[in-house]
Image 1: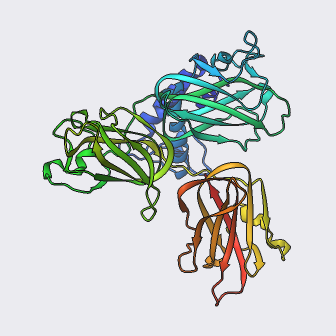
Image 2: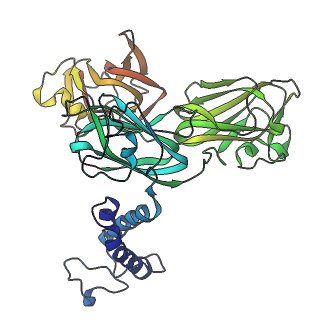
Length: 483
């Protein structure tokens, strides 16, 4: 019933009293003080009292309880925060019949919609405040199978980041799609780039719903592991720069320039902003560098002269990283030779890999029909689902459009240690090396994070060496490519 109300299938006034009554019974009676779920119907038993007691518990009822609690959480905690919010759109050819505000008016009845006579087209919603986003649903005119992205940014000056990618969508019915965990934003943009079967020129959207609740930015660097170039004063150690406190006594200080501080976020995150709070709001010159893995080289993402030291949010072009380094190189007015940072906040969300589905694939050879090239992308790593070719071989993967490759996983038959190289097609039509492994450094089945994302429409994976003790065949079971 909670799903029905949340999807708009069931009337809230009629069903919410029943939902609340049932939930209170589950939460206050079935869930025991010990944490054990009781009153569970036994396997193949009827549901009357003789077989269900406070002490009765079953694994499958615990799963049902968790599923119900998830629906109740979303139903009671998150609302459609896009409802009647200000919108702008790329085009509005029918301002009286199909203006863009009709996409967020709460009604998907009849012909109420926003329409634009051009693909691609976009619509932007200003939620009015920072919001923790949980789910999205789009209702399209005539259930058209539009292919689209949902992009989010925290303020007007930030760059959009794609957080929901439906460019491979084949479904026309409204579906609730979860935002990645810790997605926070004020502006949400839906950009329609095409459709699976619809061939017309129109983008027509009945309703866009964005679910969430107001939030505030939280630094993902808070209390994370840090190292710094110098700590001459023990009371002002570098951990003070990520402790969430901005008092003058809560700072990291080091004398002379340059000085640097490095934060290990613990896992990969998509970074989209940072803020520097300096002692006395000093306007330091600095650069921010990031890297995805400990062994990678740092890449500069920000270089500032006389930067704002008041702790104001500064946008970053979205980048995936685990490590971030701030290097202070000087100060704009030469008023001090000390680096004193009250807080360095880093903003973003945990990186969620998105599998890229190939538009086309081509292998160097397919001598065995049952072990064809298509087996590399069927989702199975079983030995019988492999591509095999005699000697060294290669596979070319065509994405169909430009995608940002961030990671990949190569599974090999019987975990064989093939040497290989991964290359990406550049704008000039030449393949450039992305990653290379020897028979001693290859890691079959391990997700490899690239030091920087690579924008490309095609990749080529080539085996370059086969250990002498193996059959001289290339046998790969699965190649997974991720944004």
